[in-house]
Image (tube, rainbow, N blue to C red; front, side, top):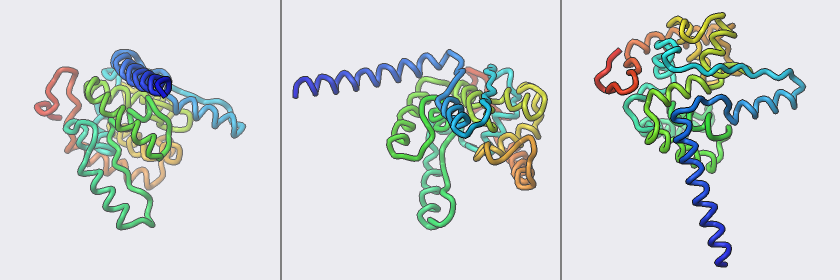
Length: 237
């Protein structure tokens, strides 16, 4: 029994030490690969497809300032105000899902939560994975700035079949760079994020164009992401 307790103790210590060190390291190092990238590669092989993984890490200053505004307007309007979790959105989603169980489940994940999931975890809806997501979200909110969270998010998120990050999708779908994306292109990219493998920013459907227009309208009410060190509450668009 003593040996078991000691083993469990060291496993717990090793888990917290390794995860905290990983979060500290990735506060400064580029994230070149994520678990999802490898999972998609295995899926492609399993389906007999050619391997495709387009990903170019670029610093936040090399990404159009319209893209952070577009994803905030689309995915997380309170990104600059919350500390990782939008409790009002969570309450709304829980109420709506309970009242309308026949409809598609409404999510309430913030950009911080999506970043934690993309970088440290695997896709899925289990309570175990959700618990890890809460843990990693809390860690990155404590140790990373909002700018760093956005930088990692925009570089790691899936933006098409085998396409990850702003620069890759800019090249693949718009023949440009992340830095030179227009406001309309940024809104169109953001419009696909609920399901980037289903919705295309290269060949948008009428539904996507409607979402794009709505996001462009909502971007007018989203504060511009401040530079590192600036006060997010004082910096306006």
